[in-house]
Image (cartoon, rainbow, N blue to C red; front, side, top):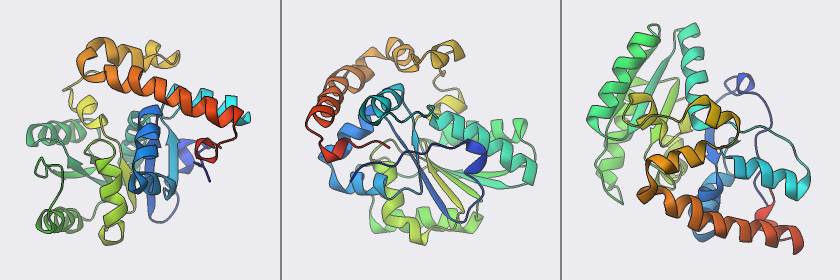
Length: 240
């Protein structure tokens, strides 16, 4: 059993009922091989986006499948444009209060037809039942069309997986670092880097101490999984 990657266009995503949207990159793939709950959360996604050039290239290498990278930032931008056209609403769950405030102000300025709110939960490894209750109440009181969750992988995907039936939002999107990108806290690499599949390298140059393990250590682990999947036909590396 493997991951079923989304091969369509963003325009086709926001046309269903309740939809859980996650992303997969080489780092989250490796983490999921060590975390059964995380892997189950990813595999149960209604839409799983190929958010990384490594995923795109390895899918072609393993099975000949061709699809384009769709980053969380691309999903976020598309969703806001969609919501602006239909006078919709969105809620941001995660990060810090100043980041949520910066995001809300920017959305109000760039997408004036969108109702926006958010909540910054306590920063801890494990949420208590009371923490979860407050988060869900905040979301459901607002009743957003789209819920954006930014608590980094695998925490965000596992939280959504464990609480999705209680959440009253049509689209639930785990988009991690996009909160920092959109708020301006961290600058997303130039479009040229993105175009040539080098967004990861540009991010590494800006934050080498934080990202070297993700891109190089886990990059080597990912290559091992892909090589094993190619030559030993290992089921966990099925990307299609």
